[in-house]
Length: 140
Image 1 (cartoon, helix red, strand yellow):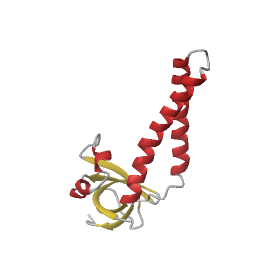
Image 2 (cartoon, helix red, strand yellow):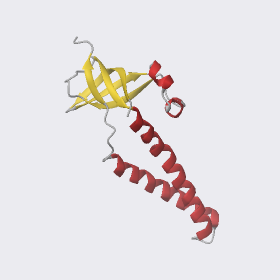
Image 3 (cartoon, rainbow, N blue to C red):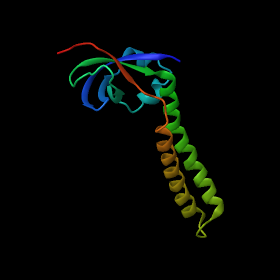
Image 4 (tube, rainbow, N blue to C red):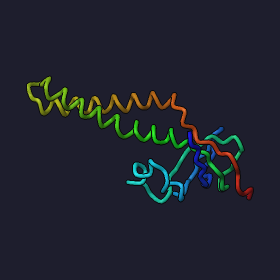
């Protein structure tokens, strides 16, 4: 499992977690998942990470990320809802719940999409992708 290290700035801290602003680095260009997250992303991204080193807002830090889990998360967030949407549409088309295949397909598409996102939310509570602050670069 590949571990990437990114440099970022702590924006806020709450309990044992910190919100970090990561600037896209050269590592993003070599990552196999850069096409997925780079399509609509800005020059930076926000990330919540565990804060065992006690970083405070304004400090620059190094954050360790597990690239394999990042790709897995991208797959789950994009592909599963899309598949669910199509399954709902196809099922609704053939069931014709209200006598109309179009309205039935639209309704079941939305229902399956909502169920997919609820399932992803439940799964994410058990998901092991945990970025961690490993080093504080400045102590100002």
